[in-house]
Image 1: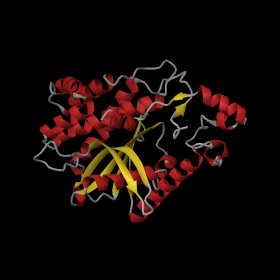
Image 2: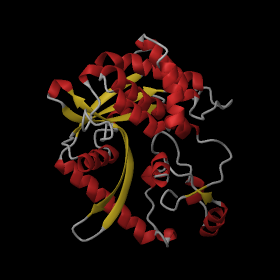
Image 3: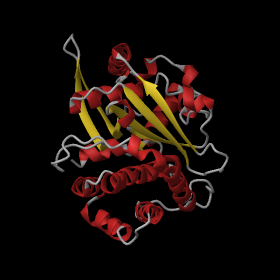
Image 4: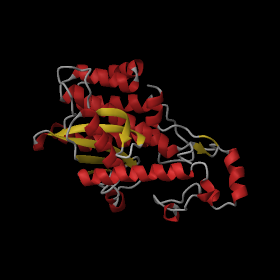
Length: 315
Protein backbone atom coordinates (compact mmCIF):
# COMPACT_ATOMS: atom_id res chain seq x y z
CA UNK A 1 0.00 0.00 0.00
CA UNK A 2 2.94 2.32 0.53
CA UNK A 3 3.92 2.10 -3.15
CA UNK A 4 0.29 2.60 -4.25
CA UNK A 5 -0.04 5.54 -1.84
CA UNK A 6 -3.29 4.11 -0.47
CA UNK A 7 -4.46 3.63 3.10
CA UNK A 8 -7.58 2.87 5.07
CA UNK A 9 -9.66 5.91 6.06
CA UNK A 10 -8.22 7.18 9.32
CA UNK A 11 -10.53 6.69 12.28
CA UNK A 12 -7.76 7.53 14.70
CA UNK A 13 -4.50 9.44 14.62
CA UNK A 14 -1.15 7.92 13.69
CA UNK A 15 0.26 8.99 17.03
CA UNK A 16 3.61 7.23 16.66
CA UNK A 17 4.31 9.11 13.43
CA UNK A 18 3.00 12.41 14.78
CA UNK A 19 5.04 12.17 17.98
CA UNK A 20 8.17 11.11 16.08
CA UNK A 21 7.87 14.07 13.73
CA UNK A 22 7.34 16.42 16.68
CA UNK A 23 10.47 15.13 18.43
CA UNK A 24 12.48 15.45 15.22
CA UNK A 25 11.61 19.12 15.17
CA UNK A 26 13.19 19.42 18.59
CA UNK A 27 16.31 17.51 17.53
CA UNK A 28 16.75 19.92 14.62
CA UNK A 29 16.18 22.97 16.83
CA UNK A 30 18.68 21.68 19.37
CA UNK A 31 21.32 21.41 16.66
CA UNK A 32 20.53 24.97 15.56
CA UNK A 33 21.04 26.04 19.19
CA UNK A 34 24.39 24.19 19.18
CA UNK A 35 25.41 25.99 16.00
CA UNK A 36 24.63 29.39 17.54
CA UNK A 37 25.91 29.04 21.09
CA UNK A 38 28.57 26.33 21.00
CA UNK A 39 30.01 26.85 17.52
CA UNK A 40 29.54 30.64 17.53
CA UNK A 41 27.91 30.73 14.10
CA UNK A 42 24.77 32.82 14.71
CA UNK A 43 24.22 33.71 11.04
CA UNK A 44 24.34 30.04 10.05
CA UNK A 45 21.99 29.19 12.91
CA UNK A 46 19.49 31.86 11.96
CA UNK A 47 19.49 30.77 8.34
CA UNK A 48 19.00 27.12 9.33
CA UNK A 49 16.26 27.87 11.84
CA UNK A 50 14.26 29.93 9.38
CA UNK A 51 14.76 27.37 6.61
CA UNK A 52 13.50 24.49 8.76
CA UNK A 53 10.73 26.15 10.77
CA UNK A 54 9.76 29.18 8.73
CA UNK A 55 10.78 32.73 9.54
CA UNK A 56 7.89 33.72 11.80
CA UNK A 57 7.80 30.55 13.87
CA UNK A 58 11.55 30.43 14.34
CA UNK A 59 11.78 34.10 15.28
CA UNK A 60 9.10 33.59 17.94
CA UNK A 61 10.88 30.56 19.40
CA UNK A 62 14.31 32.19 19.30
CA UNK A 63 13.01 35.36 20.94
CA UNK A 64 12.15 33.31 24.04
CA UNK A 65 15.47 31.45 23.96
CA UNK A 66 17.46 34.69 23.89
CA UNK A 67 15.82 35.87 27.11
CA UNK A 68 17.92 33.41 29.10
CA UNK A 69 21.63 33.31 29.98
CA UNK A 70 21.92 29.79 31.39
CA UNK A 71 22.10 26.96 28.86
CA UNK A 72 19.56 24.79 30.64
CA UNK A 73 17.04 27.62 30.59
CA UNK A 74 17.72 28.34 26.93
CA UNK A 75 17.13 24.71 26.05
CA UNK A 76 14.03 24.64 28.21
CA UNK A 77 12.61 27.60 26.31
CA UNK A 78 13.61 25.97 23.02
CA UNK A 79 11.86 22.74 24.01
CA UNK A 80 8.61 24.41 25.04
CA UNK A 81 8.65 26.72 22.02
CA UNK A 82 9.30 24.08 19.36
CA UNK A 83 7.20 21.24 20.75
CA UNK A 84 4.45 23.60 21.81
CA UNK A 85 4.19 25.12 18.33
CA UNK A 86 4.52 21.82 16.46
CA UNK A 87 0.77 21.32 16.11
CA UNK A 88 0.83 18.11 18.13
CA UNK A 89 -1.87 17.71 20.77
CA UNK A 90 -2.53 15.03 23.36
CA UNK A 91 -4.81 12.07 22.75
CA UNK A 92 -6.78 10.91 25.83
CA UNK A 93 -6.23 7.28 24.83
CA UNK A 94 -2.42 7.54 24.77
CA UNK A 95 -0.70 8.31 28.04
CA UNK A 96 2.80 7.82 26.61
CA UNK A 97 2.94 10.18 23.63
CA UNK A 98 1.96 13.32 25.48
CA UNK A 99 3.34 16.84 25.14
CA UNK A 100 4.56 16.68 28.72
CA UNK A 101 6.43 13.39 28.15
CA UNK A 102 7.97 14.67 24.93
CA UNK A 103 9.16 17.88 26.56
CA UNK A 104 10.67 15.83 29.38
CA UNK A 105 12.29 13.43 26.88
CA UNK A 106 13.75 16.39 24.99
CA UNK A 107 15.35 17.77 28.14
CA UNK A 108 16.72 14.33 29.06
CA UNK A 109 18.18 14.03 25.55
CA UNK A 110 19.79 17.46 25.87
CA UNK A 111 21.20 16.67 29.31
CA UNK A 112 22.76 13.43 28.03
CA UNK A 113 24.31 14.95 24.91
CA UNK A 114 25.33 18.44 26.10
CA UNK A 115 28.64 17.33 27.68
CA UNK A 116 29.86 15.95 24.34
CA UNK A 117 28.81 18.63 21.86
CA UNK A 118 32.37 19.98 21.52
CA UNK A 119 33.43 16.54 20.31
CA UNK A 120 30.62 16.46 17.72
CA UNK A 121 30.27 19.87 16.04
CA UNK A 122 27.75 20.34 13.25
CA UNK A 123 29.31 19.97 9.80
CA UNK A 124 29.44 23.32 8.00
CA UNK A 125 30.42 23.57 4.35
CA UNK A 126 31.77 27.13 4.73
CA UNK A 127 32.10 28.82 8.15
CA UNK A 128 32.24 32.22 6.43
CA UNK A 129 29.11 31.79 4.30
CA UNK A 130 25.81 31.03 6.11
CA UNK A 131 24.06 30.30 2.81
CA UNK A 132 26.22 27.24 2.18
CA UNK A 133 24.93 23.80 3.30
CA UNK A 134 25.09 22.80 6.96
CA UNK A 135 24.46 19.47 8.63
CA UNK A 136 20.92 19.97 9.94
CA UNK A 137 17.74 18.60 8.35
CA UNK A 138 19.08 18.21 4.84
CA UNK A 139 16.34 16.88 2.57
CA UNK A 140 17.57 15.01 -0.49
CA UNK A 141 15.81 14.05 -3.70
CA UNK A 142 18.21 12.13 -5.91
CA UNK A 143 18.13 9.80 -8.89
CA UNK A 144 20.11 6.57 -8.75
CA UNK A 145 21.48 5.58 -12.14
CA UNK A 146 22.40 1.95 -12.88
CA UNK A 147 24.61 0.44 -15.53
CA UNK A 148 21.63 -0.91 -17.47
CA UNK A 149 20.14 2.59 -17.75
CA UNK A 150 17.59 2.17 -14.95
CA UNK A 151 16.91 5.41 -13.06
CA UNK A 152 15.27 5.33 -9.61
CA UNK A 153 14.20 8.32 -7.54
CA UNK A 154 15.28 8.12 -3.88
CA UNK A 155 14.25 10.67 -1.24
CA UNK A 156 14.87 11.18 2.45
CA UNK A 157 16.10 13.53 5.15
CA UNK A 158 19.50 13.60 6.82
CA UNK A 159 18.78 14.53 10.44
CA UNK A 160 22.32 15.66 11.05
CA UNK A 161 25.84 15.69 9.69
CA UNK A 162 28.56 16.04 12.31
CA UNK A 163 32.32 16.10 12.59
CA UNK A 164 34.22 13.86 14.99
CA UNK A 165 36.64 16.27 16.64
CA UNK A 166 38.61 13.37 18.13
CA UNK A 167 39.14 11.81 14.68
CA UNK A 168 40.52 14.78 12.74
CA UNK A 169 37.07 16.15 11.98
CA UNK A 170 35.83 12.94 10.36
CA UNK A 171 32.39 13.53 8.85
CA UNK A 172 29.73 11.45 10.57
CA UNK A 173 26.03 11.12 9.88
CA UNK A 174 23.56 11.57 12.76
CA UNK A 175 20.24 9.73 12.68
CA UNK A 176 17.63 10.39 15.37
CA UNK A 177 15.10 7.74 16.39
CA UNK A 178 12.34 7.71 18.98
CA UNK A 179 11.28 4.41 20.50
CA UNK A 180 9.31 2.85 23.32
CA UNK A 181 12.35 0.81 24.32
CA UNK A 182 16.03 0.90 23.47
CA UNK A 183 16.90 -2.75 24.04
CA UNK A 184 19.41 -5.04 22.33
CA UNK A 185 16.98 -5.85 19.52
CA UNK A 186 16.60 -2.15 18.77
CA UNK A 187 20.37 -1.61 18.81
CA UNK A 188 21.16 -4.59 16.59
CA UNK A 189 18.58 -3.49 14.02
CA UNK A 190 20.94 -0.75 12.80
CA UNK A 191 23.94 -2.97 12.10
CA UNK A 192 22.82 -3.59 8.52
CA UNK A 193 19.79 -1.33 8.03
CA UNK A 194 19.56 -0.12 4.44
CA UNK A 195 18.13 3.26 5.46
CA UNK A 196 21.36 4.22 7.23
CA UNK A 197 23.46 3.00 4.30
CA UNK A 198 21.39 4.81 1.69
CA UNK A 199 21.36 8.08 3.58
CA UNK A 200 25.12 7.97 3.99
CA UNK A 201 25.58 7.27 0.28
CA UNK A 202 23.30 10.14 -0.73
CA UNK A 203 24.95 12.48 1.76
CA UNK A 204 28.38 11.73 0.29
CA UNK A 205 27.16 12.37 -3.23
CA UNK A 206 25.29 15.59 -2.40
CA UNK A 207 27.92 17.26 -0.25
CA UNK A 208 31.08 15.77 -1.72
CA UNK A 209 32.34 14.44 1.61
CA UNK A 210 33.66 11.11 2.82
CA UNK A 211 31.01 9.80 5.26
CA UNK A 212 31.36 6.16 6.30
CA UNK A 213 30.46 6.53 9.97
CA UNK A 214 27.14 7.29 11.63
CA UNK A 215 25.69 7.75 15.09
CA UNK A 216 22.12 6.61 15.75
CA UNK A 217 20.61 8.66 18.58
CA UNK A 218 17.80 6.75 20.30
CA UNK A 219 15.45 8.62 22.61
CA UNK A 220 12.53 7.28 24.63
CA UNK A 221 9.46 9.46 24.41
CA UNK A 222 8.51 8.51 27.98
CA UNK A 223 11.68 8.55 30.12
CA UNK A 224 12.03 5.95 32.88
CA UNK A 225 15.15 7.48 34.53
CA UNK A 226 16.88 4.10 34.67
CA UNK A 227 19.90 5.09 32.64
CA UNK A 228 18.39 3.85 29.39
CA UNK A 229 16.41 6.82 28.13
CA UNK A 230 19.03 7.86 25.56
CA UNK A 231 21.29 5.51 23.63
CA UNK A 232 23.85 6.45 20.98
CA UNK A 233 24.92 3.62 18.71
CA UNK A 234 27.88 4.05 16.33
CA UNK A 235 27.67 2.24 13.00
CA UNK A 236 30.06 1.95 10.07
CA UNK A 237 29.49 1.29 6.38
CA UNK A 238 31.75 0.57 3.39
CA UNK A 239 31.57 0.32 -0.39
CA UNK A 240 30.29 -3.25 -0.22
CA UNK A 241 27.40 -2.14 1.99
CA UNK A 242 26.48 0.60 -0.49
CA UNK A 243 26.55 -1.92 -3.34
CA UNK A 244 24.19 -4.21 -1.41
CA UNK A 245 21.90 -1.26 -0.65
CA UNK A 246 21.83 -0.16 -4.29
CA UNK A 247 21.10 -3.75 -5.36
CA UNK A 248 18.28 -3.94 -2.81
CA UNK A 249 16.73 -0.69 -4.10
CA UNK A 250 16.97 -1.97 -7.68
CA UNK A 251 15.32 -5.29 -6.85
CA UNK A 252 12.53 -3.76 -4.75
CA UNK A 253 11.64 -1.37 -7.56
CA UNK A 254 11.78 -4.22 -10.08
CA UNK A 255 9.31 -6.22 -7.98
CA UNK A 256 7.04 -3.19 -7.66
CA UNK A 257 7.10 -2.58 -11.41
CA UNK A 258 6.37 -6.25 -12.07
CA UNK A 259 3.27 -6.37 -9.89
CA UNK A 260 2.01 -2.79 -9.61
CA UNK A 261 -0.86 -3.48 -12.03
CA UNK A 262 -1.27 -7.15 -11.05
CA UNK A 263 -0.90 -7.14 -7.29
CA UNK A 264 -3.01 -10.29 -6.82
CA UNK A 265 -0.15 -12.24 -8.41
CA UNK A 266 2.56 -10.75 -6.17
CA UNK A 267 4.49 -13.09 -3.91
CA UNK A 268 3.64 -13.12 -0.22
CA UNK A 269 6.49 -12.43 2.17
CA UNK A 270 4.75 -13.67 5.27
CA UNK A 271 7.83 -13.28 7.46
CA UNK A 272 7.01 -9.58 7.54
CA UNK A 273 3.47 -9.99 8.89
CA UNK A 274 4.67 -9.63 12.49
CA UNK A 275 7.76 -7.51 12.05
CA UNK A 276 8.65 -4.57 14.30
CA UNK A 277 7.07 -6.10 17.42
CA UNK A 278 3.48 -5.91 16.18
CA UNK A 279 1.16 -7.42 13.54
CA UNK A 280 0.99 -5.65 10.20
CA UNK A 281 -2.13 -3.52 9.85
CA UNK A 282 -2.73 -5.02 6.40
CA UNK A 283 -3.17 -8.62 7.58
CA UNK A 284 -7.00 -8.30 7.19
CA UNK A 285 -6.44 -7.10 3.62
CA UNK A 286 -4.03 -9.85 2.61
CA UNK A 287 -6.09 -12.52 4.37
CA UNK A 288 -9.27 -11.61 2.53
CA UNK A 289 -10.55 -13.19 -0.69
CA UNK A 290 -9.68 -11.61 -4.07
CA UNK A 291 -13.20 -10.17 -4.22
CA UNK A 292 -12.89 -8.88 -0.66
CA UNK A 293 -9.58 -7.21 -1.42
CA UNK A 294 -11.11 -5.39 -4.39
CA UNK A 295 -13.90 -4.16 -2.14
CA UNK A 296 -11.41 -2.99 0.49
CA UNK A 297 -9.31 -1.32 -2.20
CA UNK A 298 -12.28 0.69 -3.41
CA UNK A 299 -12.81 2.01 0.13
CA UNK A 300 -9.22 3.15 0.63
CA UNK A 301 -8.13 6.78 0.36
CA UNK A 302 -4.97 8.56 -0.74
CA UNK A 303 -2.20 8.14 1.83
CA UNK A 304 -0.78 11.07 3.75
CA UNK A 305 2.71 11.93 2.39
CA UNK A 306 5.71 11.36 4.63
CA UNK A 307 7.57 14.38 6.09
CA UNK A 308 10.25 14.04 3.39
CA UNK A 309 7.65 13.82 0.63
CA UNK A 310 5.84 16.88 1.98
CA UNK A 311 9.05 18.87 2.19
CA UNK A 312 9.97 18.00 -1.40
CA UNK A 313 6.45 18.73 -2.71
CA UNK A 314 6.55 22.10 -0.95
CA UNK A 315 9.90 22.91 -2.49
